[in-house]
Image 1 (cartoon, rainbow, N blue to C red):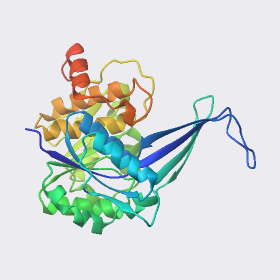
Image 2: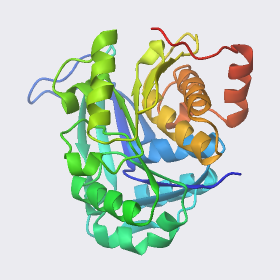
Image 3: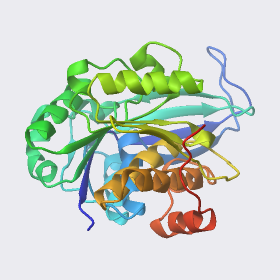
Amino acid sequence: MNQSIAVIGSSNIDLIAQVAHFPQPGETIGNARYSQAYGGKGANQAVAAARAGGNVTFIASVGKDTFGQTMLTNFSKEGINTDYITQSGEEPSGTAIILVNEAGENCIAVAPGANALLSSELIDEARIAISGAEIILLQLEIPVETVAYVVGLANRLGKKVMLNPAPAQPLSDDLLKHLHYLVLNETEAALLVDHPVETTHQIEEAANKLLQKRVQTVIITLGARGAYVATRREQQMVSAYGIQPVDTTGAGDTFCGALATALSQQKKLNDAIAFANAAAALATTKLGAQPSAPTAAAIAALMKEQSFSSDEDF
């Protein structure tokens, strides 16, 4: 059974210039190589969930401009329900201006634009989609007040909420206690528990602290090491898939989208995490965030090729 997923979050256009070096104040650099890409953590996760086989509704705010229309067209091509994406004339669509030098380093300036207008009022307009969803998937590139409002509404409706707290920022215990799934990397976990999250002991300690805040399921993604999952009943490492990475951009978003899809299809938790690990691994084999999100068939093929069970020790 493939129940629906409501992804609520940001959508951007990435404006990318590859340059020989970063300009000094007042300097103009010629011969830059320019490209555009779809971005925004919410949009990345919605696309990843849809490609992984999910029935996805995306709730977002974009501008009433060319970028906004282009994004809507792209979501429709991906099979995503766009009925609850609002086009605003008050702000332009969100953009990220990215300079990449020859060493692969980047400088990024994000203009949230219409993403900042995703308010509780717009969430209320999407209440039907939220009430009909199996999983509500959120990130932190929209106002945190809106995130808190969604979590409260979902709790009243008896819905399962998955939060990816990125970009990292402090969160209240009142918000955390209503989460069914908290999916975060070591950096994001370290901010929430106020200590480094690097060693095995530190990972276990961080998961326990977050469980004590009444999060039902904590999933700490560890890149090539896999993902550590903790509930009140058990704690376990789910192994990563061995693959040669080309670009890790968007792998975390792909993990979240694929995990939401697997859970909406009623997969067991560890099986769902293994599915998400495979999706994230495949996402590192191509450039870009949304372009690298794999299909359900590709994920299944990798899992079959590298069939193994979860490991308790790591």
